Image (cartoon, rainbow over all chains, first blue to last red; front, side, top):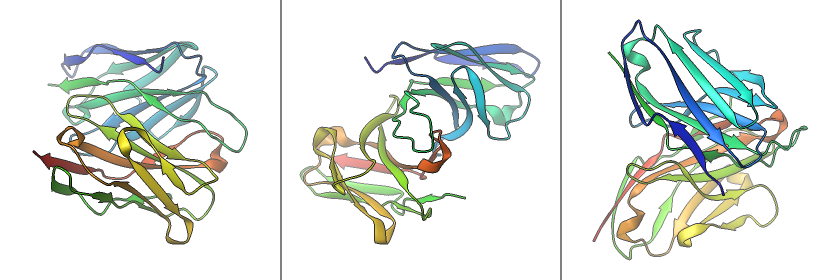
Length: 117
Length: 115
């Protein structure tokens, strides 16, 4: 099973709302990722968690707050977003081989399409 | 910083035509290379990957790619495309010395196969 699930599939929120995106995998992967994909653009890495610890933050604004409550779950908390944050938010996971040589393969979820009004 | 170039932004082919999509990357060290496909309305799926060994890699659905280190290239090929291959194709590169997989994607190639 190489499935990564994401909820909700679609989300519309106002600029003053607080919402959360959820991601789940049951492949025993220990690395999880958030990407942002604008229309007709490639995915751009936002955050990487390994063993439930934040390992990479690609200078993402603080209105995006990731959380990894356990090895299977990854959340992205949203607050005071801007219309330009509207995008497809993708979650991915990989085994995380660690060390200096990674042979990981990332598996992607279907994404949450976020619209900020 | 690592960059990935896909020079063909849009490709239109008839069924049974051969396909080659270009991918070039900038990093001079050891890399892992991937091709992902995104069918309309679906999530990113892995087509094939290269870590080491035989530079000619075979993936799913009849796709293959060749890693040419001297040219910093990892071009995707398929001898005969089908209408169902209509999708967006992304090349991605990971610098293996980071310890984490930090994928950098190319800008993508939209393939339209006409029946």
